[in-house]
Length: 249
Image (tube, rainbow, N blue to C red; front, side, top):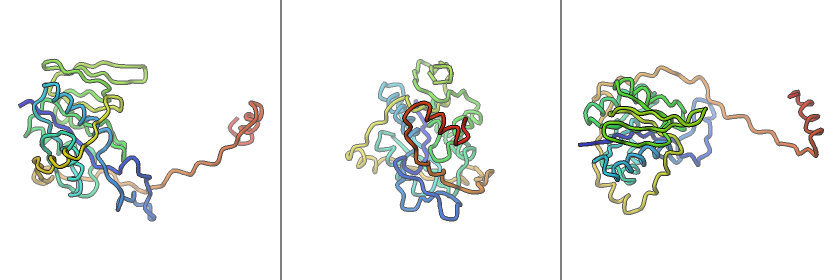
């Protein structure tokens, strides 16, 4: 079966204002709306479009996280994914651990394509896709803004500083998606009801043979400084004078 695996992550919803805990040990998540990472939604949308074009037979979505993450998996199933795998794990999941867990799923499911978001909006690491490709020993194309499949190859357009770059990689491969690749579809109520009956398998890191190591320890969390109130100047001369007084010129 031609299968696409999509990796997703549960993050604080992008509309929520992030608040730091009073003791500066992390970000407040209790009672906060959580959602699928926006870049991962784009990855899932692209997988669904590939399937709708008849180039894949199944879309499998997977994640590593606590029990509550099943809500986001059900959202992915409501979008159109066929099955879901939940690797249950508590605490901080670093990119390498996530990549190792996804590798075990890849080895079992044998997808011809793995798609992930280019980064998660909570930690901005942008490492899981690259690490998975290295562990799997397969090609990768990151920051995709256009994907075209033809036979046993994928042609990927990506945005770089100098403009657009086009890569052609052999399949199976790992792709990570950029913001302009597509616009994810809205989930409708009937699809949410159908998603409750779709298969959702639960496993854990130990069952996969993955050690949940933590290599980085954050020392302190601090909110960004508040922006100072701006001033309005009458002309360029007054602007230059104001900049000089601030020591910027």
